[in-house]
Amino acid sequence: MTTETVKKQRWKLNLRDRFQDLPLPARITAMAVFVVLLYLLPTKAFYENLGFPIPMGSGYLPFYTTGSDMAGVLFQCGYYILLALGLNVVLGYAGLLDLGFFGFFAVGAYTVALLTSPESKLITEYNWFESPWPWLVTVPIAIALAMLSGVLLGWPTLRLRGDYLAIVTLGFAEIIRIVAKNQDWILNGDRGIPSVGHPPGTYSNGEAIFELDFAPYYWLVLTVIIVVIFLIRNLANSRVGRAWVAIREDEDAAELMGVPTFKFKLWAFAIGAAIGGLSGSLWAGQANFVNSATFSLENSILVLAAVLLGGAGSIGGAILGGFLVIYLPEWLRSVGDVFGWPTQVTVGGIHIDVSPTSLRFVIFGALLIVVMIYRPQGLWPNRRRAAELKDRQKEVAPVE
Amino acid sequence: MLLEIDDITLHYGRIQALHGISLHVNEGEVVALIGANGAGKSTIMRAISGLRAVSSGAIRFQGEDISKVRADLRVARGICQAPEGRGVFPGMTVQENLEMGAYIRRDHAAIAQDMERVYGLFPRLLERRKQAGGTLSGGEQQMLAVGRALMARPKLLLLDEPSMGLAPMIIQQIFTIITEINQQGTTVLLVEQNAQQALSRAHRAYVLETGNIVKEGTGADLLHDPAVKAAYLGVA
Ligand SMILES: Nc1ncnc2c1ncn2[C@@H]1O[C@H](COP(=O)(O)OP(=O)(O)OP(=O)(O)O)[C@@H](O)[C@H]1O
Ligand SMILES: [Mg+2]
Image (cartoon, rainbow over all chains, first blue to last red):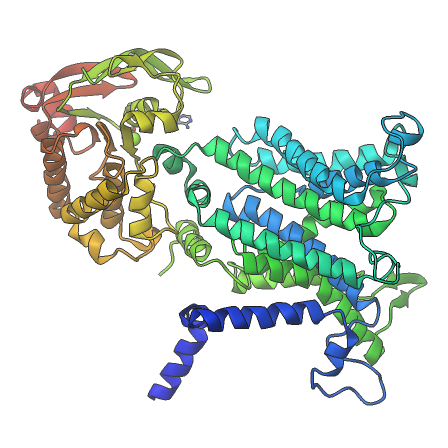
């Protein structure tokens, strides 16, 4: 092998190390450029200047979604990335399987809706307060309530080992959805809560920033994501983070090292729930209208798929996963539009919806299977988790 | 008396695994616990370290009943167990495993010293400092488990079958190290299948049968006890 190819391979393998080895100013500049690019993503000009050839006469821009507003897709990616980051703390760091993570999203969204809508029953029927609260004030409340529900849910279940947690969390998310759907005394059942408040701020001409245009919402959620990443990174590198690793790798051994396992599992659960609630409150701030239809079980599964696809235990993985599960179907649909992929086919008189957004679960089901076979640690794995996985495989199938 | 176990019983669901066990460990001793598979040796260890709650009876450590104290707080009191089946953290490096052993401590200078000491006892671990725990050989994992338990600077070290699955050479080495650790001031309670080695190294020993203590004595006495010889030493 020539030194050239050796070099090339090493370069490929150690992209992460390479980046770490760069001098600090270079790293900061690179990060800054990258972040600026992220903020530019919803603008069409960005895609026009990418330099990819545009298919003749189609008007299609590479990577740009035509089926839905690009900024809208990015905003949705944003709150799914937040959800994935939250579940990553629970599942990736502490190793706790939460199948109903979207439940915390629902708690956050309903909290914001109930407090900011002038038609909230808290105002119209129960007279708890006179006028709706500003969105910004309700966000910390939404986070706190999501956290509280996480603690209430975790308290009885986290003492138990095994699959109890998965079942209880699954039930929790479904109970919230069903209660929201069927009862009428506060959440308004299927009719939902309209006129939910938006984030504050006006342009210099007096127009509200957070209205119908999705781009400001995307910028907001992107900013929140950056802050959350910093917090989680610090946490993961602290004593708490080390305790989580120990718990997920061997809970008994962790306890024998003096780690208060229950306490730290509860913390992981509460922190994850808080991030889920934050995501819900951001979504509600845009949505205008909140009802139970948003909180179906599929969403929890989609978030789970995002974390596993990206690579549990890795922040980059959660981001990649959260982005892919939303963006990929939308992008495929845009590509499909250009190349004439039908949205519906009729077989023997039955109409089947075949648009990529509807086939999302088929796509990710298949993708997940392929990834789990060929790259079980995920697309952007955490090194340590990859080693754990190898260890577990060794136990299951002692080959070689 | 460092540890005194007073008539404890323990159940796994409906199955009673310990039927009124009493034993004690004095400061500075190496005490061995021998018995057949399923006799309840590991169960006693779990009861002491707090992984399993006892159904009745008392576990006194330095005179205080700790039977209701949480496992992680028992570590803080000075009890540390190297679990059966090694239980090293597979994704952590050797170094990180050892650091994890010192989780409850904050005296960084002393931790660094103890790290040196463990690497001194097990030079093999030093060579493999950056290797993931899960990729170590069985014997190396065993060394790591013992070393990691030492990092907590326990007053009482619980070792559950430290020789399990090791080559005879390495077993010798491990027992020599146990003696060394003991001479440096750590009290050791040792569970062993390798009764020959355990009894010759221990000050005192207990023989366990189906959840009951059936014999106790000095290591030397039990080594020459005909019943023990027949049952555990493979001598007719
Ligand atoms: N988690 C458990 N659930 C139910 N029964 C258990 C459990 N753990 C141990 N037992 C039972 O309790 C008894 C004592 O087990 P223990 O592990 O203490 O034996 P041991 O003396 O350590 O054996 P070995 O030498 O094989 O390690 C056995 O009959 C075992 O089957
Ligand atoms: Mg045992």
